[in-house]
Structures are given as C-alpha cells and as structure tokens.
Amino acid sequence: MVGEFALPPAGRPRRRYAVAGTGHRAGMYVAVLTGDHADVGEIVAWLDPNPVRVDYYDAVVGRADAGEDPAGLPR
Image 1 (cartoon, helix red, strand yellow):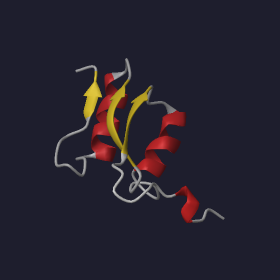
Image 2 (tube, one colour):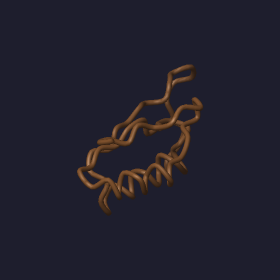
Image 3 (cartoon, helix red, strand yellow):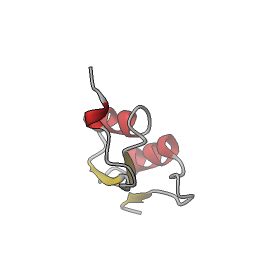
Image 4 (cartoon, helix red, strand yellow):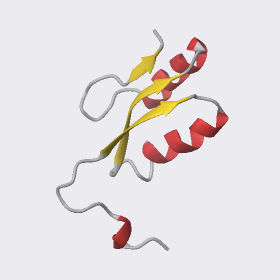
C-alpha cells in the first residue's frame, strides 16, 4: 500500500516526461501518467520513428492540462 509518503511536497510542480519510443512498453507509462498518477506527472512529448505511433499517442493523450498539445515528434 502506498501511503502519503509517495506524494510530492505541497506546492511542488508536476514532473514533466518525454516518452522515447512509443511501442507496447510505453503504453504502461502513458496509462499511469494519464490515469492514477496524473497528479504528479505529465507527458509533454514523445518520440518515435513511426509516424503512425506518434499519431496514435496524439489521439490517446490529447490535450495537456495546460491547454497545449503535447509534442509528438517527428513531424
């Protein structure tokens, strides 16, 4: 069981993450950062040589909380 010790200190900004490679394993990280742990981290970019995967995560993650689109690279 994870207690409040795992929570970031009050007033601390969320960590920003870039996902390099958007294959199957990346889905685990994307799922928790857009779900249960969205309060402590956010995805701001992902990189993959396959533009179809980049488009997929553009659709899955959508708009960031700040109202800006996450940057899927390359474009």
